[in-house]
Each structure stands twice: as C-alpha cells, then as structure tokens.
Length: 442
Image (cartoon, rainbow, N blue to C red; front, side):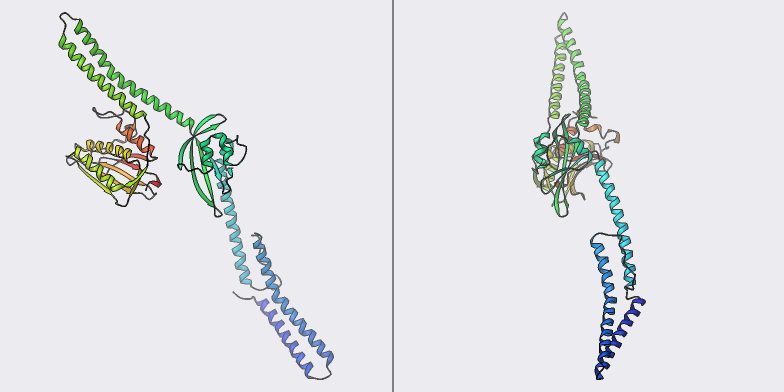
C-alpha cells in the first residue's frame, strides 16, 4: 500500500524544483555582483519549499479530518481523495472498513431496539438497582405494577412490604422466593428472583417480580378438590363397612338368645377398621405439614453408603449399589433428604421384588448446569407414563397395602429444597426417580 501515481509525480516535481532553486542559489552566490539573481533564487527556493510542504501536509490534513470524524462518531465520513493527497489504497481500505462498521452499527442498533421492545413487553416485571442504590422500573409490567412509591430508593418501596423493600436494598435472601406484596388491588404472592449483572464495569442487580396469586389460587383449589375427592373416597370406604358391622353387632345383641360370637367378631372388625382410619387421618396430617429445611454441607458418598446399608438390611434378597463420586458435596437437610431417599429405595426394592435378580442403584453425579443429579433405579416393572404425574398425589397408590403418602412426602421434601423430581424409564427396564438440585448445590 503506497502513494498513488499523481501524488508521486507532483512530489517529484516539487523536489526537482527545490533542487533547481538550490542550484541557482549556489550559482548566484558563486558569481560576484549578482544580488538580484540571489534574491530571485532565494524566492524560488522558498516557493519550492512551500509547495513541497503544502503537498505533503495535504495528506496529513486529510488524515486528521478523517480521524476527527471518527472521534465524533461520524460513521458516514469518507476519506477525501481530492487534490492528490495520496494513499489511494489506504483510502479505499478505510472507506470499506467504514461501510462495514456503519452496517454493523445499524444492525446492532436494530437488535438493541428489538431487545428493548422485548424487555418492555415481557409479562414479568423487571426492576434494576444500580450501584448508587437507585431503583429503576425497566419495563411496562413493572411500571403498571408499582405505582404507589414516591421515590426511587429501596425504602420508598416499603409501601409494598418490608420484605420486598429489604430485597431491593440488598438484604441477603434466596435467589428465588415467594414474597407477599401489598398492591392497590390487595396482597399478592409473587415470585421474586434476583441476579447480578455488570454494565460498564459496575454491578447492577436485576430483580424480576411475577404475581402468582391467581395461579396459586387455582392450584390450591385444584389440590383441595383432589384432597376432598380422595378423602371422601377413603373415608366412605372405611365408614361403609363400619356402619354395616355396627348394625350387625346391634342385631346380634338384640337377638334372642344373644349372638355373642357374631357381635364380638363384628365389633373386633369395627375396631380394626377404626384403627386403620385413625392411621390414615394421622398420615393426612403429616402430608398437610410442610417440612422445614435446615441446610448443611456433607459428603455425598458417605451419606449414600449409609442409606444403602440401612435399607439393604430390610431387603436381604435385593442387591443395592451406590455410585457416587467421592469429591461431591451435598448442600441439603440430611434428615429430610434421608427420609426422601429411604422412601424411594424402599419403593424401588418393592418394585424389583418380582424380578429374578432384583437390584437397586443409587447414583449421585454432577451435571453440566452446576447442580447434582440423585437417581434411584430398579429393574422392576416400571411406572407407566400415564401414571407418572398421579403417583405424587396425596393418598394415590396402586398397592393394596399402600397408604399413598410416601411419594407425596418425597415431593414435598424435594420442593422444599428448591429442587425437582422426575420419573423416567431406567436402563434395566424399571423405573428411575431423578432428583435434580439447584446450581448452588454442587
């Protein structure tokens, strides 16, 4: 990449003129009494120097103007090729680069407008808290939801509840939680989630608020309907024979002579049924109580081996295995988690009992998302896909001797930890229950 031909020819001409003028000066000073000639030679030399300087300086001026335009963000600027400034190849390359930069900037601006519109139209309220502590309502949902505050400081948002204001102020709390927010339409339970991002090197907390009262009310109503349906069914199943047996006992006692044997048998059966009904009601009370989680950090391999040994003693005919990386740590409530996994291990052992060589495997592995996966697999008949949602319902069971509360309690414990539970098809043909922790659990 060099000078163009015109620039080079003009430059050569000015250099030649400079040399000629310099030669004239030397000749004029070598010959005595040529004062006028000396003055003319000096003027010619000065003119040649000025012309050469102007020719070279023109390129510097053009470059300076181009750089100044870039400094002010003028992406439409182009390199001035007029006047023989030179650097034709450089001008072409710079102009092409400017065109590409201008096109990329236009695409970036278009993408930015799209993202801004997407954020503004999203149905979840988005707030940000800057490094100075100021709260900004970042989208339409936030502006429509929060209208009662008088300022932009976290304390100004206390009108919506102390917990909400404390989270805006940076008080530590779960990354995801349900909070009660006082809105003009009444108190609302809302899902609150926060994260920290950086803009221009400064940390900014982004907080999303999603009112869930309507959804939770619908879920509660559906759950209540399911519970009433199940309870009614179970209570009627128990009370119907109790009523019949009580009538039988009354008839036996009223007979002449009194049929003591029939009355005794009927009342003994009534007693057993009432005892069974009492156990069922106690089970219902345990389902209705939400577990309280007390988090601890403990080694996953030691924890799993202890569970395997304990459950293995109850099922000597079943082979139990634990596959756990010795470096993994669990962050959970060890008592509640043990209760959940023991339930799953026992269920797996029951399911595999009919196999030729029943076996159950407990695996704890790290996932790429940063959390852990706890799975219990068996080689039993498996869980049909149509039943994989129903088995977690309270009192739902497919076993004659089952209570239908074990898997529901497992799910309560898992949800209380902020985890998830799924039922899958295992590689051995049976069922695999998978508990997945949040990212911070690994």
